[in-house]
Image 1 (cartoon, helix red, strand yellow):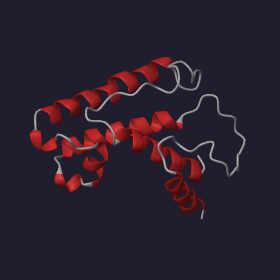
Image 2: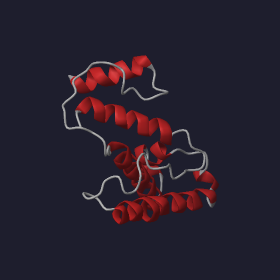
Image 3: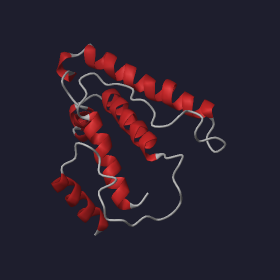
Image 4: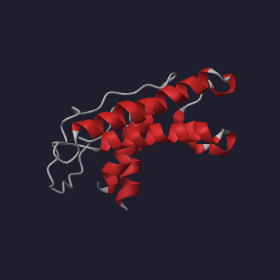
Length: 140
């Protein structure tokens, strides 16, 4: 991914993850078989349902059993990792990494290097000012 697209993808993932009170396994942005023959449906299903889904369930269970962890966000667990048990940080990091990975895959992407400077890729909920700052920073 180009750095601009990577920055926008990060922003979109963060916007989604920071708004959750109970962490959820978000739907894949494509069908499980959409990447065949490069990545099999079985591989996608295993990583999405078993691994990613497992991290979400385990983090929700850990948060539910400890009042100090409630009302925290995934980015809080990651960015303030010294304040939390390693298990919590690892689960939050795995959720973030998987969500970021799924959003970065586009089975319909052509391989053309698109250098347009429009806002077609701006995530909803991201202010124009923040979008412009991210693009300016990552394109410099």
